[in-house]
Length: 66
Image 1 (spheres, rainbow, N blue to C red):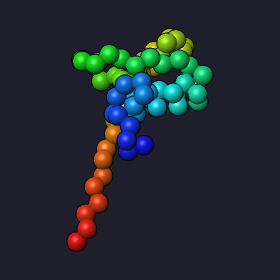
Image 2: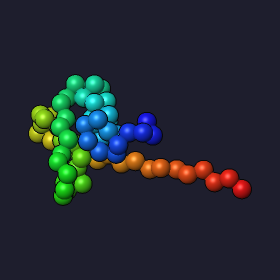
Image 3: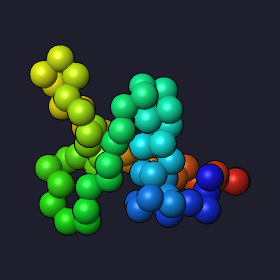
Image 4: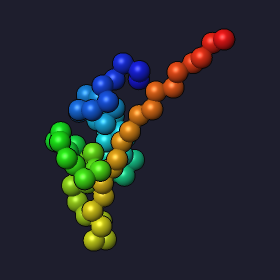
C-alpha cells in the first residue's frame, strides 16, 4: 500500500473507489486533476435524490527512533 500513488485509477483514490463500488454496488468515477470542490470521486447514480461524493486522503506516519 505504501507504494501506491495517492491519486489516479491505479493509486489510492482508485483503490478506495473500487472498495466503495464493491461494498455499495454503486459506480463511482474519479474526478479530474484540478479544482474538485473537495470531492475526489462521485457516484454515477443518485440515491434517494442524493448524489454521493468521496474525499480520499492519506497520512504518512513517521517512526521516530531515539
